[in-house]
Length: 127
Length: 140
Image (cartoon, rainbow over all chains, first blue to last red):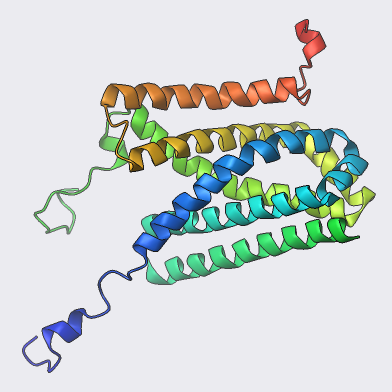
């Protein structure tokens, strides 16, 4: 260690907290509260929709209020699940390479799931 | 473990295998497991939206898979998983506010949430008429 010209402060810089913890904590709970309000609605409403077969489903998804609330629910859900699974990955995957790959994959899947939902809902809502 | 190359004298965090199982521990593990399950379940919901947007044939194919026995099992599990994670999550919000840490109450609520999630999912499926056992068969 004594042959290094790096100062003790220089060695530890960047190894501490990323200063994102509070934001993550609050976002997880804010999306949880949103989902606690939205999930009962989507659960009850969705059952009515699936019982109407294809026509029932298309009519339910396409109604403006439903289309908006479905995307808000899925948006809150995707955000909640992305930051939730991030913690699971960080807890169980110790190897840096695998961990970073899974974290990026988690983000990619989350974006893909939301875009797929948006395309499907908007197609039925605007058509 | 004592024979391994571990030289750190500080106490290690005990692994799940050496703990005696208790309700709050099961509740914590289930919260995580149902969270991951809901991640996959949300994809099923989006697949359903996509099937509806793709037309009657795609929707029919989705309906056939969803109403098959494996499909029914998965969707019932998803219902219970959503109910569990929502109730358990609400309990986490109460804990975050600093309440509900009394061990007896925490264990009681933990057990109650598991029962309510499974019972609630069964009730939803029966009332909605989605279950293989419909209300008339139950004499309703």
